[in-house]
Amino acid sequence: MPHTTPLIFDGHNDILSRLVDRPRAEALEALRNGNGSGHLDLPRMKAGGFGGGMFAIYISNPPEVGFDMEAMLQPSYDIPHPPEVPHARALPRALAEASLLIDMDRAGLLRICTSAAGIEAAMTDGQIAAVMHIEGAEMIDPDFHALDVFHAAGLRSLGPVWSRPNMFGTGAPFRFPSDGDTGPGLTEAGKDLIRACLARGIAVDTAHMNMKEFFDVVALSDKPIINSHSNAVSVTRHARNLTDDQLRVIGESGGLVGLNFATAFLRDDGQMRAQTPIETMIRHLDHMIAQAGEDCVGLGSDFDGAVVPDGIGDVAGLPALRDAMQNAGYGADLITKLCHGNWVRVLRATWGA
View 1: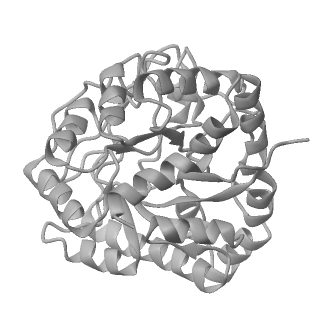
View 2: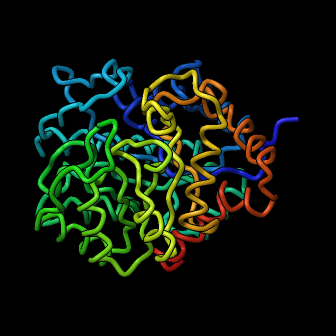
């Protein structure tokens, strides 16, 4: 029988950006009952034992820019950074995505959580525990007025960059093969943003940062280092993955790295193909646990934002990953840590509650 427990707290999904352009009632219905599109809806979440996660506010590239997914089927690739998204475009869209999450909460479809205790309580109550997260801070102004408003609305996690330049940094490109040492560190505004997040109790997410930006955060932060959805460069030499040094730093800080389900970051050949064995996920978990420690690894699926292994398919396929962990010899305590325990621990250490 498929394993739907322990519940999974997932470090990254993009359902808000997938649904935000629909009429609001239609978007809520898509979460409530689903229609088979995307990776996430409540029936499939329940079927997969999905207990909650980070719900990302993410500003997609404009249609005229798009994203060249076909390039990621080549033996090697270096996709140019897209142009910056203007603040004037980013802010209204970010507000719409935050409002959608708030409406999901009002409708009783999930529960916005601002503490680790709140996450635990929601999962115990059978509610989806949702943490408001920003992926790419194009909507944040240099005076941090928007940051304060989003924080008041429930924001508790922020990644300054996506793989696209903004006023805070450059981000890691979609490049294979690469070790992630691809560009300059954070700008002065980026360093100020890190300090502003730390002062407000907002977790800083180093996902999508290049190597220098990652170590800038390490130098600035006295909190556990978090990377919500990346894998191991030693297994897949992709610029979006982390070196052994980075993984060890995460472990030494008591932080967390979340296993990214995106197949380009899992496969030896760096290609974004669904025909990818679940065993590749175990290879990355094995390596990340060896480098960071079993208390500092979790899951960060990138559901609704990536191509995932066809043995998973969508959130309802999460039992196959639990089964693969068990088949690989992972004990019950370790599986619980990977599924949600480590995320709850690191967020409690970061937020203080």
